[in-house]
Length: 378
Image (cartoon, rainbow, N blue to C red):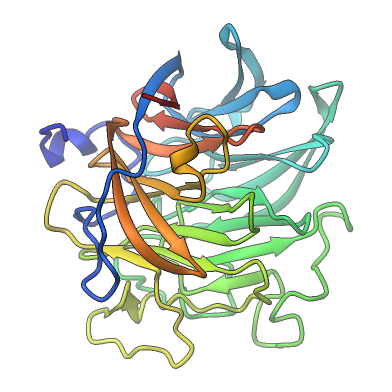
């Protein structure tokens, strides 16, 4: 592990959280730290403050850069921007271009960003022959943000073909507006919508709160502080969310592919498994499958992916994640939604802001400083 001061880790970053944490296992879950696989990080490109990425057409990886550009990674590295919305974004605080996703078949490309007013925005572009059609741009969804932090912003299509959108609680500290537990706002939530079902979008009829007049129909899950990165297990369809903590605990949440939605992950009455500022645990609280405390260099969990590639057989089925300030790649071994072991891959990804899963299941690590690396066998 590299020695690095907390201040140097935070300067020039998007300030993903206000917490200090170390990647250690929770006291109430099985702890079996081991090196699950022999890996190395192979630098494949340098980007300008990469923040997110997604598998693209033709075996490419599309990398989002914070200021508003998207570039495709191929055999020759990163090409010229395939999309540039930098004139529409702002990068103060934790803002910028925060998420990208393709629908099935690469027919549409979606970007999640904060506009010049700081409003979280999801836009859609049609794609033809692997190229974005700029004149087809349309806005799918917007959400005003009361503060410049905790935007969330990750987007991904689930196995069900619907678009999932993660929003933080609105920012500041301690969820001052109580958004995490308030079902009448999209803040502090994971949303599920059908962008192809209507204009601007349709609500899937089986969303958990469609019959509740006091809740937003778009909500799939709630009680989230800043779900910076989430993913679906390509092998099982299970959902995993890395939710950034406030001041003491970082957490990873899980839901099975069979979930009907409606999970309450507890914020801001809970931070991980612990009552927050005297809060009472909700009766329907779904506790994290993993948490770690603030005893070391860690400060902001960066959710990753369950590895389903073929290059590293010993890593298959394990959830790979990191921490923005710590940078060490770590793993969770899981069985039926329970953590059976916590591993350390013994490689340093830098200021790990995101992971990307290629179409072949291999994983890439994005260092906000610029490095784009692939996780290879050692």
